[in-house]
Each structure stands twice: as structure tokens, then as C-alpha cells.
Image (tube, helix red, strand yellow):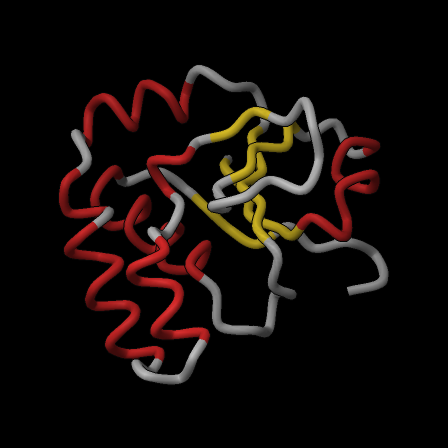
Length: 122
């Protein structure tokens, strides 16, 4: 199983035996594994942050410009090389976030199970 989550709950994920992996453009914690190939570029993120493009346009651009260029088998091998990975970025589970787009892409393109990790207080 591959999980997704957010940086604010890092310690809880580590206590649960998960391996944190940053998929953010900038990782706030030193020493984490970073998979920048899943991170949005500034040219996609900034227009969304500035409300120039909406969630739908962001999703379309992220999917085609980032995910669409990945080598699926290479990504599968990387994902499977880490024990109990949890893909992290900044937003809370209920917020729009690229990690949800990444999770959907992994499920549909690599046929791997991905879900948001549920903590007891969530």
C-alpha cells in the first residue's frame, strides 16, 4: 500500500512505521526522501496560487506537463523500492492538492493501491 498525507502529521506517520517521502516543490524538513518528479513546477503552481487558473486547469496542466512525461515503469520501480511510503505535501486531506492527482494517476496508470492515511484524530 502507498499512502498520502501532509507534513504537519509527519511524526505520527513515522510512529506508525511509514516512510515519509516529500513530493512537494520545497520540502520543509531536512533528511526526507524527495521525489521531485511528482512535484508541481512553479509555472503551474504560481498561476493557481494567484487564482489565474482554477483547480480544473491546474489538474489538466499538472497531469499533462508533469505526470504525462513520466516513465511509468521507472516510477513503479521507485515506488516499490521504499517500504511503506507515504507521499507528503502541505495541504490537509480535504483541501485541493496535487498529491490527490498523483494518487489517482498511480492508481489508474500503475494499478497500485494508494489512499490517504487516516490518523485517529482525522
